[in-house]
Image (cartoon, rainbow, N blue to C red; front, side):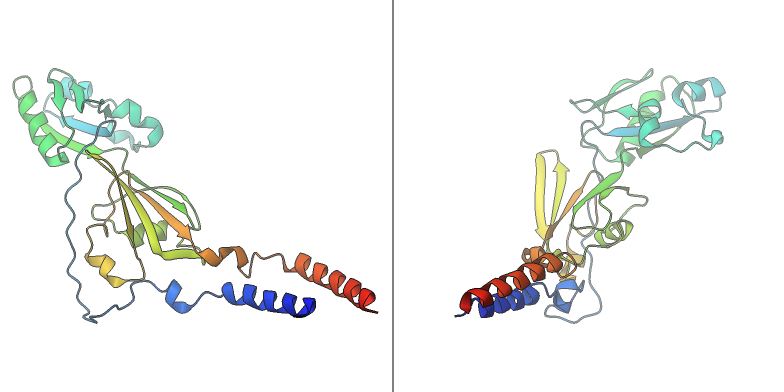
Length: 254
Protein backbone atom coordinates (compact mmCIF):
# COMPACT_ATOMS: atom_id res chain seq x y z
CA UNK A 1 0.00 0.00 0.00
CA UNK A 2 1.33 3.42 -0.96
CA UNK A 3 2.28 5.76 1.90
CA UNK A 4 -0.15 8.53 1.00
CA UNK A 5 -3.04 6.07 0.90
CA UNK A 6 -2.00 4.75 4.30
CA UNK A 7 -2.18 8.29 5.67
CA UNK A 8 -5.62 8.84 4.18
CA UNK A 9 -6.88 5.62 5.77
CA UNK A 10 -5.37 6.71 9.09
CA UNK A 11 -7.25 10.02 8.94
CA UNK A 12 -10.51 8.28 8.12
CA UNK A 13 -10.11 5.84 11.02
CA UNK A 14 -9.27 8.70 13.40
CA UNK A 15 -12.32 10.67 12.27
CA UNK A 16 -14.64 7.68 12.57
CA UNK A 17 -13.31 6.73 15.98
CA UNK A 18 -14.01 10.26 17.21
CA UNK A 19 -17.70 10.06 16.32
CA UNK A 20 -20.01 9.81 19.31
CA UNK A 21 -23.34 8.17 18.57
CA UNK A 22 -26.63 9.25 20.07
CA UNK A 23 -26.83 6.00 21.99
CA UNK A 24 -23.67 6.89 23.91
CA UNK A 25 -24.98 10.31 24.97
CA UNK A 26 -28.62 9.65 25.83
CA UNK A 27 -29.53 9.08 29.48
CA UNK A 28 -32.11 6.61 30.87
CA UNK A 29 -32.77 4.68 27.66
CA UNK A 30 -35.31 1.87 27.53
CA UNK A 31 -33.72 -1.51 28.06
CA UNK A 32 -36.35 -4.22 27.82
CA UNK A 33 -39.59 -3.12 29.50
CA UNK A 34 -41.02 0.25 28.39
CA UNK A 35 -43.22 0.77 31.42
CA UNK A 36 -43.40 4.50 32.28
CA UNK A 37 -43.38 3.68 36.00
CA UNK A 38 -40.17 2.76 37.79
CA UNK A 39 -40.37 1.77 41.43
CA UNK A 40 -37.46 3.36 43.28
CA UNK A 41 -35.32 1.53 45.77
CA UNK A 42 -35.68 3.84 48.76
CA UNK A 43 -32.21 4.39 50.23
CA UNK A 44 -31.45 3.79 53.87
CA UNK A 45 -31.10 6.92 55.97
CA UNK A 46 -27.51 8.12 56.28
CA UNK A 47 -25.73 7.07 59.47
CA UNK A 48 -23.03 9.24 61.00
CA UNK A 49 -19.42 8.22 60.38
CA UNK A 50 -16.25 8.95 62.38
CA UNK A 51 -14.79 12.38 61.48
CA UNK A 52 -18.16 13.72 60.35
CA UNK A 53 -19.28 17.11 61.67
CA UNK A 54 -22.76 17.55 63.09
CA UNK A 55 -24.53 20.72 64.13
CA UNK A 56 -26.57 20.53 67.34
CA UNK A 57 -28.97 23.31 68.26
CA UNK A 58 -30.52 23.35 71.74
CA UNK A 59 -33.45 25.70 72.38
CA UNK A 60 -34.62 26.24 75.96
CA UNK A 61 -36.82 28.75 77.79
CA UNK A 62 -33.67 29.98 79.57
CA UNK A 63 -31.42 32.04 77.20
CA UNK A 64 -28.40 31.21 79.37
CA UNK A 65 -28.62 27.52 78.46
CA UNK A 66 -29.38 28.25 74.82
CA UNK A 67 -26.34 30.52 74.46
CA UNK A 68 -24.11 27.85 75.99
CA UNK A 69 -24.95 25.31 73.29
CA UNK A 70 -25.51 27.61 70.33
CA UNK A 71 -22.23 29.36 69.56
CA UNK A 72 -23.62 30.99 66.41
CA UNK A 73 -26.89 32.93 66.88
CA UNK A 74 -29.44 31.91 64.25
CA UNK A 75 -30.88 35.42 64.19
CA UNK A 76 -27.65 36.77 62.73
CA UNK A 77 -28.44 35.21 59.36
CA UNK A 78 -25.01 33.58 59.14
CA UNK A 79 -25.12 30.27 57.30
CA UNK A 80 -22.98 27.27 58.13
CA UNK A 81 -20.09 26.88 55.70
CA UNK A 82 -16.94 24.76 55.64
CA UNK A 83 -15.03 27.66 57.18
CA UNK A 84 -17.41 28.02 60.15
CA UNK A 85 -18.10 24.30 60.58
CA UNK A 86 -15.36 23.85 63.17
CA UNK A 87 -16.81 26.70 65.25
CA UNK A 88 -20.47 25.70 65.22
CA UNK A 89 -20.36 21.92 64.97
CA UNK A 90 -19.28 18.90 66.93
CA UNK A 91 -16.57 16.76 65.33
CA UNK A 92 -17.07 13.03 65.62
CA UNK A 93 -13.86 11.43 66.85
CA UNK A 94 -12.29 8.25 65.49
CA UNK A 95 -14.18 6.13 68.00
CA UNK A 96 -17.51 7.66 66.94
CA UNK A 97 -18.15 9.94 69.93
CA UNK A 98 -18.87 13.63 70.45
CA UNK A 99 -18.32 15.61 73.64
CA UNK A 100 -21.44 17.55 74.63
CA UNK A 101 -21.58 20.03 77.54
CA UNK A 102 -23.12 18.45 80.67
CA UNK A 103 -24.19 15.35 78.77
CA UNK A 104 -20.59 14.18 78.31
CA UNK A 105 -19.49 11.73 75.63
CA UNK A 106 -22.24 10.44 73.38
CA UNK A 107 -21.81 7.68 70.80
CA UNK A 108 -23.17 8.95 67.46
CA UNK A 109 -21.36 6.87 64.81
CA UNK A 110 -23.61 4.35 63.11
CA UNK A 111 -26.74 6.25 64.12
CA UNK A 112 -29.16 8.38 62.11
CA UNK A 113 -29.79 12.05 62.86
CA UNK A 114 -33.24 11.30 64.28
CA UNK A 115 -31.82 8.73 66.70
CA UNK A 116 -29.06 11.13 67.79
CA UNK A 117 -31.66 13.86 68.37
CA UNK A 118 -33.65 11.61 70.72
CA UNK A 119 -30.52 10.52 72.60
CA UNK A 120 -29.25 14.08 73.08
CA UNK A 121 -32.66 15.17 74.41
CA UNK A 122 -32.64 12.28 76.90
CA UNK A 123 -29.06 13.03 77.97
CA UNK A 124 -29.93 16.70 78.68
CA UNK A 125 -33.17 16.08 80.57
CA UNK A 126 -31.36 15.76 83.86
CA UNK A 127 -29.91 19.25 83.47
CA UNK A 128 -32.21 21.25 81.23
CA UNK A 129 -36.01 21.20 81.31
CA UNK A 130 -38.02 21.46 78.09
CA UNK A 131 -35.04 21.43 75.74
CA UNK A 132 -35.79 21.20 72.01
CA UNK A 133 -32.90 19.66 70.10
CA UNK A 134 -32.13 19.87 66.36
CA UNK A 135 -29.33 17.82 64.80
CA UNK A 136 -28.08 18.36 61.22
CA UNK A 137 -25.15 17.32 59.04
CA UNK A 138 -22.49 19.96 58.34
CA UNK A 139 -20.20 18.17 55.87
CA UNK A 140 -23.10 17.35 53.57
CA UNK A 141 -21.24 17.27 50.24
CA UNK A 142 -20.74 15.07 47.20
CA UNK A 143 -17.65 15.22 44.95
CA UNK A 144 -17.67 14.92 41.13
CA UNK A 145 -14.46 14.08 39.28
CA UNK A 146 -13.42 13.11 35.77
CA UNK A 147 -15.35 13.94 32.61
CA UNK A 148 -17.74 16.54 34.03
CA UNK A 149 -17.90 20.14 32.87
CA UNK A 150 -17.26 21.60 36.32
CA UNK A 151 -15.55 19.09 38.67
CA UNK A 152 -15.72 19.90 42.35
CA UNK A 153 -17.57 19.45 45.63
CA UNK A 154 -21.27 20.25 45.70
CA UNK A 155 -23.67 20.52 48.63
CA UNK A 156 -26.52 18.08 49.03
CA UNK A 157 -29.14 20.74 49.67
CA UNK A 158 -32.07 18.39 50.22
CA UNK A 159 -32.84 14.82 51.26
CA UNK A 160 -33.10 12.14 48.56
CA UNK A 161 -31.03 14.04 46.00
CA UNK A 162 -30.42 11.82 42.99
CA UNK A 163 -27.41 11.35 40.71
CA UNK A 164 -28.87 13.38 37.82
CA UNK A 165 -29.55 16.37 40.07
CA UNK A 166 -25.95 16.29 41.27
CA UNK A 167 -24.62 16.05 37.69
CA UNK A 168 -26.77 19.04 36.77
CA UNK A 169 -24.99 21.08 39.46
CA UNK A 170 -21.72 20.37 37.65
CA UNK A 171 -23.13 21.51 34.30
CA UNK A 172 -23.68 17.97 32.93
CA UNK A 173 -21.10 15.47 31.68
CA UNK A 174 -18.66 16.19 28.89
CA UNK A 175 -19.32 14.94 25.37
CA UNK A 176 -16.68 12.24 25.71
CA UNK A 177 -17.75 11.06 29.17
CA UNK A 178 -18.42 7.34 29.33
CA UNK A 179 -21.99 7.35 30.59
CA UNK A 180 -21.99 3.57 30.78
CA UNK A 181 -19.19 3.42 33.33
CA UNK A 182 -19.81 5.80 36.22
CA UNK A 183 -18.03 4.90 39.44
CA UNK A 184 -19.42 5.77 42.84
CA UNK A 185 -17.21 5.58 45.94
CA UNK A 186 -19.20 5.49 49.17
CA UNK A 187 -17.92 5.42 52.72
CA UNK A 188 -19.41 2.72 54.95
CA UNK A 189 -18.59 1.54 58.48
CA UNK A 190 -16.82 -1.44 56.88
CA UNK A 191 -14.70 0.75 54.56
CA UNK A 192 -14.92 2.32 51.11
CA UNK A 193 -17.42 0.72 48.74
CA UNK A 194 -17.04 1.11 44.95
CA UNK A 195 -19.97 0.60 42.59
CA UNK A 196 -20.01 1.04 38.80
CA UNK A 197 -23.29 1.81 37.05
CA UNK A 198 -24.74 2.83 33.69
CA UNK A 199 -26.56 6.16 33.30
CA UNK A 200 -27.84 5.28 29.81
CA UNK A 201 -29.96 2.47 31.27
CA UNK A 202 -33.16 3.67 32.91
CA UNK A 203 -32.96 0.81 35.43
CA UNK A 204 -30.53 3.02 37.37
CA UNK A 205 -33.62 4.81 38.70
CA UNK A 206 -34.56 1.62 40.57
CA UNK A 207 -31.08 1.16 42.01
CA UNK A 208 -30.11 1.81 45.60
CA UNK A 209 -27.34 4.04 44.22
CA UNK A 210 -29.74 6.38 42.41
CA UNK A 211 -29.74 8.68 45.45
CA UNK A 212 -26.46 10.14 46.64
CA UNK A 213 -25.21 10.15 50.22
CA UNK A 214 -23.00 12.63 52.10
CA UNK A 215 -19.30 12.21 51.24
CA UNK A 216 -20.01 10.23 48.05
CA UNK A 217 -17.39 10.52 45.30
CA UNK A 218 -18.57 10.17 41.70
CA UNK A 219 -15.91 9.53 39.07
CA UNK A 220 -16.80 9.71 35.36
CA UNK A 221 -14.47 7.77 33.07
CA UNK A 222 -13.53 9.04 29.58
CA UNK A 223 -14.39 7.10 26.43
CA UNK A 224 -11.57 5.16 24.78
CA UNK A 225 -11.81 7.32 21.64
CA UNK A 226 -11.31 10.60 23.46
CA UNK A 227 -7.75 10.88 22.12
CA UNK A 228 -9.16 11.35 18.63
CA UNK A 229 -11.96 13.74 19.53
CA UNK A 230 -12.80 16.15 16.74
CA UNK A 231 -12.61 19.28 18.83
CA UNK A 232 -9.27 18.44 20.37
CA UNK A 233 -7.28 16.63 17.71
CA UNK A 234 -4.35 18.77 16.31
CA UNK A 235 -5.48 18.68 12.69
CA UNK A 236 -3.50 21.76 11.67
CA UNK A 237 -0.25 20.14 12.78
CA UNK A 238 -1.21 16.82 11.21
CA UNK A 239 -2.20 18.35 7.85
CA UNK A 240 0.99 20.38 7.77
CA UNK A 241 3.00 17.22 8.35
CA UNK A 242 1.08 15.38 5.64
CA UNK A 243 1.66 18.20 3.15
CA UNK A 244 5.38 18.20 3.89
CA UNK A 245 5.51 14.43 3.57
CA UNK A 246 3.69 14.44 0.21
CA UNK A 247 6.05 17.09 -1.17
CA UNK A 248 9.10 15.10 -0.09
CA UNK A 249 7.61 11.82 -1.29
CA UNK A 250 6.78 13.33 -4.69
CA UNK A 251 10.30 14.74 -5.01
CA UNK A 252 11.91 11.41 -4.10
CA UNK A 253 9.62 9.55 -6.49
CA UNK A 254 10.82 11.68 -9.38
